[in-house]
Image (cartoon, rainbow, N blue to C red; front, side, top):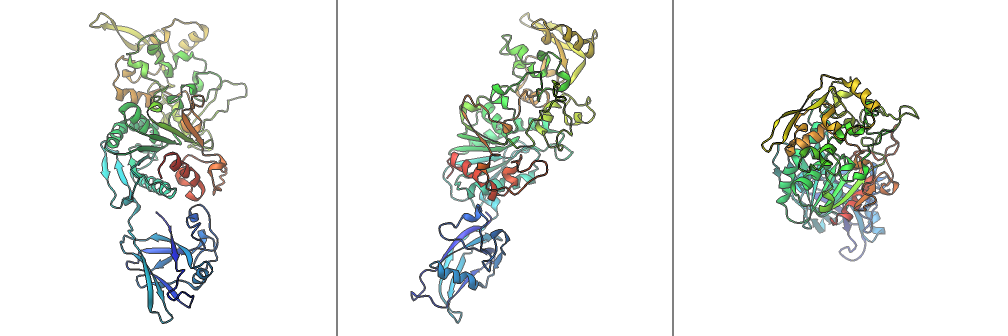
Length: 557
């Protein structure tokens, strides 16, 4: 757990008076390092949240610049300046201790006379293990949970924290995420049992999935039932925390697989906000940041995002095509547990690019390089690139060939393919040889009033996959279509407050100054903004207030 404070109390020398004694620390396995500090009994844990002055072996430098002293098996005498300080503090002093190797040997403080004879000693029992031995690791990358239980689990309060990382995190990088989140929650006072969950969110050959985001969304859905099954075996309260796309896994597990959760903390959630809050849905055609510029002049009813309305709104509740929408996809989560949204108004990955092409233009054009870099507005880009594979020269490589904002050219038309067992017509969709994309768009511009079922019979978006046009769609296929073929019409949860009027989600903007203790970075493009992964990337010294809040609201003490 990095450095932890140890109070040295030598306030009562053997004969009751101060005399020229020496103090020595030793560790049989030589597996301990220390830093001398000027901390006292009342502020001994302040090293976590402040850069303490007067530290190091000479007590003359800030903590962040202090030297680290290894404790040998034969012992080391405490420096004179530190023992002199003990005399001014009533014998109380604080050292910071870290483990440097596996050991169960105690740290021993010895009092020596002028001849080096031990006249008193005290021992601090220690069990030093790697941090990964202090929590349970759960691997869902290949399906069913592979569990690695820690061998040095600390005492706990009967509660569980289950944490999931986000997109483009390798199996090895997940270990770093888990250890950091465990340590920071612990340092903020959590006594809950910690479970670090790894899932396959980095599929793809180029830069570990950067061009395969939509496929990794499908992987998130696929991991959900396995997370639910693992959670089912845990006793006590279950508090879920997830970063970025990991929130898709947890949301699906709760909504689709009846996973029990007492609280759900969404951190920088890369999930369409309309999935929880339908008020976030935006189908405006003027300067809509989620609307592809080539579709601005098309009837909104022709968008793939509104394909579901042809079947849900026409009294066909059992038609699975009516479920092909992000709108309210995870609304049931809000009725099953307490939900907290820790978002950032400075998040570069989840922010929406909303600058129109011209001040009076209704279009907002986005390509792969929009913003200061490829990672800027990345979530918005992958939603707008759905269906654009093979159409856009570069951006299409980060998109898909399913539905989305791609055009079917020629458009598709519905034709009767047979008669069902109950005498109903069966339909299929095929290319319409009588028209092309341009002719169809021109027709729509000249005919603002159309038959109610026009876009049920005439499809402008790409015709893959075929299952999207059938009334019965398996749940796994529905999830895949959402991931790769249905663009969201709202920004992500992690970029905004949600359900403000319903007041059933607690929203915390981590970009506000009240959640910081200074800030170590002033980026040339982002300034001092709280960026997408700063919950981990920024040292606890600067963002500990968020972890304190997580522990407090999660009742994890």
